[in-house]
Length: 226
Picture: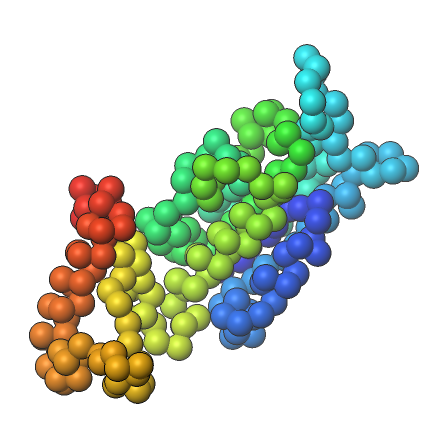
């Protein structure tokens, strides 16, 4: 899968996407991430990418011309399944969206800044608008990194155990059950005996029960969907 990310601060994305699972995914040739510095398409000697908003008010708005120039160049090179804009008024990112995006081949992410991007860019180019939560960030770069990470790990072959992503929290609208590792007894606390039994059927039943209990306690809103 290929992500093209349009940003005014590419350095914010270099570290999150160049380590751990994302770096391994790129090394395997399963994931490509290309950063496009919007100022390369800026206007005039100072490479301007923003301006005051019509009608007055605090905060700058990202101008349409630089964004359109970058988008037109990318869209002329290949077909994209999604042109994503990271925005607080977008659809809340969840596991279902991540699953769907992981089936795509190419996607663009536009990182907003200031008061956002000119509405005409949203009307002409954007077909996915995603929020990572009900709060406001300084820019869309961290949101873009979250999207790439949450989607990239679902690509077949990225994780060492390809089944592990299937049992993450939210895959079935339930939270994941508790997990344990060695030693079997630590600080006078023992691992539940069922996990040591070797009985796969009982273990699966226990994990499902624990998922239900944890979801009921911590995220009861999910149970209606489960």
